[in-house]
Length: 358
Image 1 (cartoon, one colour):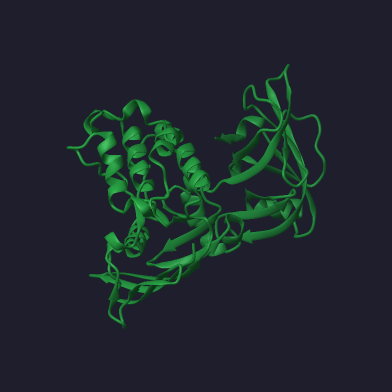
Image 2 (cartoon, rainbow, N blue to C red):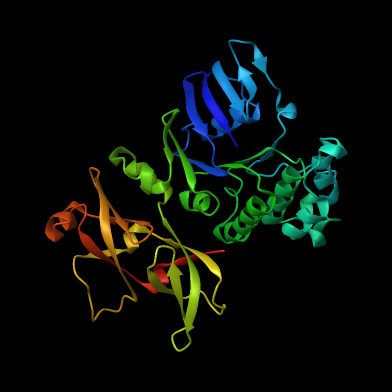
């Protein structure tokens, strides 16, 4: 994906100025309610026309107000999944899925119907009517319909916002499967940062009607002015590694993290070699300036402080353990421990503080 944005949308008293270049396979868009996230997605989809400026996708000009260019939504070849799915009530699940296929000629179809049904576990639902489906099932069908449009970009507009926590955890692995299986670029809008980090590594923060930041979580967290927004969105660390073994007597798995560190995590019975991603909240980590023994915390990892970001009511310490980890502490802690950039430190946290990402 190569998406270039330099456009302004004015609607009554609200205005959105979007200026960015996006090139990552999956980008998560987050920010407070009313910031302009859905307007941004509508602009890219062609559902919202810019007041001025340009939108260019993979070299094709989709909007250029000065030149009088506006490619309508149905000609942009984009797949869109909304918060409530918007399935066609008079069609079965098969009919809804095939509707996505019918939007383009057979010769232009790059996504196979059978593969989508298998990937999203829709086989038992094909003859059902939308009214008989659960919320999670409807969203899986909506995702399948969007994939079967063989889009060049998949736009997800708060697709899990109407689901409870349990259903969210069920659907998120399907989004990851779709991303990996079809190599489709994704732009995923949500107010929930942990949800986005299940699918995306690149982030776009929208605040006050503008794009306030773009980059990785650790890069965005380096701006003190953005810490309250990150905190409100539910900031988490994503740790990546491989299962190295199991402590059978303690029901804990040894995880060899990318970069060399090792930790313990209760992820159930699984063989060595499985790749895992673990979520860890910054405020679940304790810092120490020397190695600590005689405590119940199972994980004690050595690292180096790479940044200290101070906001009015919180401090975020970035620690390199072979991959970056953000730790939230108080200004008093920084002063008492004498924390400085470049100093060694130890991260302490419970094994149960880690959440396994499927």
